[in-house]
Amino acid sequence: MDKRTFLKSAALLGLAGLVKPLKIMAEPVADTFTLPKLPYEFNALEPHIDKQTMEIHYTKHHQAYVTNLNKAVTGTALASMKLEDILKDISKHPVAVRNNGGGHWNHTFFWNILSAQGGKPTGKLAAAIDSDLGGLDKLKETFNQAATTRFGSGWAWLIVDPAGKLAVTSTPNQDNPLMDVAEKKGKPIIGLDVWEHAYYLKYQNRRPEYIAAFWNIVNWAGAEKNYLAALQK
Image (cartoon, rainbow, N blue to C red; front, side, top):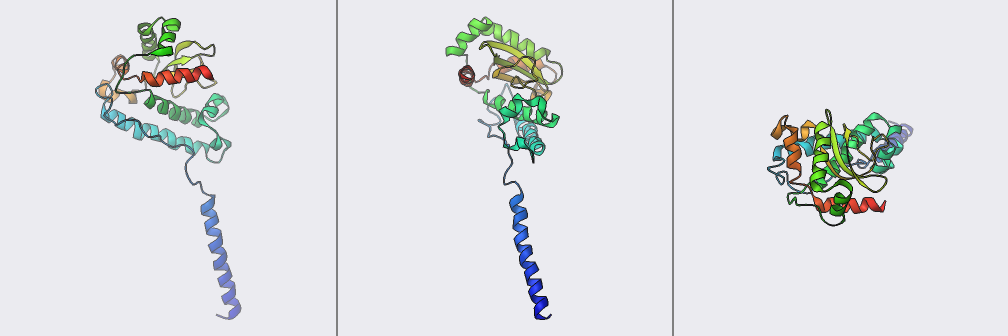
C-alpha cells in the first residue's frame, strides 16, 4: 500500500468513526412514557383483588399500553406533550394513541385509587357525595349500575363535572371523561376497570361481585385529593 492509499483509507476509517456516534445520538435516550411504580405489593389488595391478577394486569396489560403508546407517538409532536393534553383533544389523534394513551392514563389512575386500608370518604368529598349524589349508599348504587351495565369492556367513574358537581358515568374501552369524545366529561375522582382482564381469574363472569369488592379497597384519601384538585382547575 502506497502512502496516498494509506492516507485515504485512514481518512475513511476516521470518518466512519465520526458517523457511527451520530447515529447513536439520533436514537431516543428513553421512552416518552414509562410504567409507573406500583404503590403496593401485588398481594396487598387480597382477598378483593388477587395477587396473580394484579401482577398480570400491571406487568402485562399496563406495560403493553405504555409500549404501544410510545410506538404511536415516536417521531411526532405528541412525544413532547403531556398525556392529559393529548387526551383532551383525542379526536384529533390516531386510534392507537386513543386506545393506548387512554389505557396508560386509566391504569395509572386506577392503581392510585386503590388501597388495602379502604375506609369511607371524609371531609369535603364526603359532604359533596351527600349533597350532589344523596349519600354514599346512593353513590354505590349508581356507580355499581354504571359499572355493571357497561357493555363489553370499559370503565366506571365518579367525576367532577364542568359545573363542579359530582356525577357518575362510564366509558367504553380505554376512553375516559378527560377526552373530548366522552359522552359525559369531567375530572375523574375514582375509577373502576371493568375489562375482564381486571377480574376474570378470581371472579370469572361474576362482574357484580368484583364491583362490590372494589368498595373495600377504595383509597378515599386519594379520592379526596383528586376532588380538591378538580375543584381548583
